[in-house]
Image (cartoon, rainbow, N blue to C red):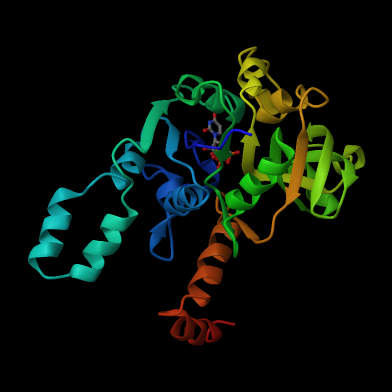
Length: 288
Ligand code: UTP
């Protein structure tokens, strides 16, 4: 079984649901407490043993690349001022040279198209896809849970969770096969079905381990729901040809691409921080 060494982070979306914050600032740079959303995703990937992060960016997203660079002046100033702890933390958070590469999607033609833009950087090996908007707070990082399942099952592994029936039109939905309550066989996938057409309530969340053949399907550039090239449609073509499973991951997911989901992430993560948590909870109580 080949190891999962590379993770693709598509960050080319326009983030229209978070306007006006995202007029200039990439939504991936919005902070949850004191860390940009994208940093949570990169840390999760690294914790799952990923060695190379492939950012698929677009115009106006250069700040994301800058964020993971060595900020020489800042580092030197912290050193001069004797702020050792802060400096060490920043250094530890900076990926080693070559661990992050970037390519551009050029046109926002959909998530499937964004993943396909990474094909030369991924090569012919299984890889992970992490949608940064989905911030997952978990005892064992979600992608690490999936890598462990992939090592047993091989093939494609998707993060899944139950959603209310009235929300199926927001997600890719799984038609389930054999199911042990944690790992479920994927027999079919439908992108954003209306509740009456949904094969289940099992929704695909933004973490994937994919076989390289998905790139061949994406290369057809078939347009799907919303006039976009959908990753779900390319994946659906692989069902029956390769092992295909969903993992009901352990952890809590916040949709940071949406105003309420973003606010929930900020409140939840601030409330559980050992340093500011108690004071923050007391503060919050004044507003409830
Ligand atoms: P979203 O559906 O959240 O779209 O994309 P969006 O454009 O980012 O945000 P809204 O809906 O306008 O607010 C899901 C994921 O796919 C990426 C996004 O960056 C996000 O991680 N994506 C989407 C691309 O990289 N390229 C695309 O063409 C579309």
